[in-house]
Length: 314
Image (cartoon, rainbow, N blue to C red; front, top):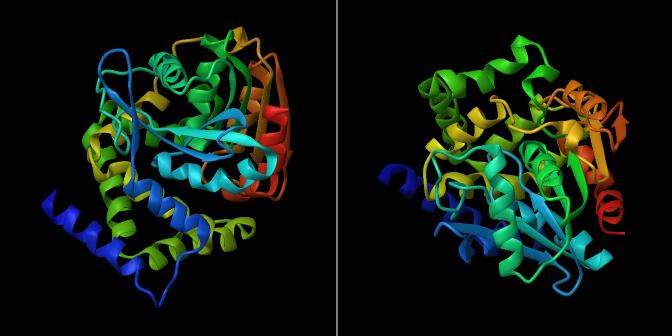
């Protein structure tokens, strides 16, 4: 852990050299990482969060992807200011500065979300789950119908019934062979810590054409900073637990969702199979689905971000 911390500090120092100034989005990401905000929930744990966009605007909770953190919220600052939306990006337990909760289940999240909303004096709100945040948007819509007005899921993970065995293996490894999952996450983190530009170039090379430039630009840099923050305080165990949650029964029925749900998926997604989106479209009775034939994981959000925020907060 001491070696990991030292390498993280070295990386942060390198990225702040005057010769390579950060963009405004990346600067905001660094500011969020350096100045954490937390809410104490009912059982005494702390939940980290970031607020961006218009502080007096319509509230929208954005649930970060995996492995990410509250720093992810920096991606929505500009659109929030443009549309008069107050964007709140809370961290799941064990991510970033949020206190770990090793025994948590997906259905525990709505209680934490309510506590955060209460602490911020937010009554009703909409939610948007990106990638690994998708299940958390779905469970919030299902279990908090009196507070969640609309829910959006972009490139979100779906129940394992949506895909074949091959696409389930990563999630099942965390559930049944946690050390294997931890090793995989350690290797991913090692590559990310070794150097931002090389890591983002690797991600760009494995992406479809629609995402290549996004990984190499400020979006990729912001996601990289969010990834580093996700594990900096509590290590890898919470990330393994999160992966196991994705691969476990979700604990509620999708067809019980009554609030409007909007889905955005790309058929060229190399990280989340588009079949997951089609499954949610079939199972959620209130779903309105948008599928883009040439868009990948990042470009679905980047090219439709304004529409997403407007749809969910109109």
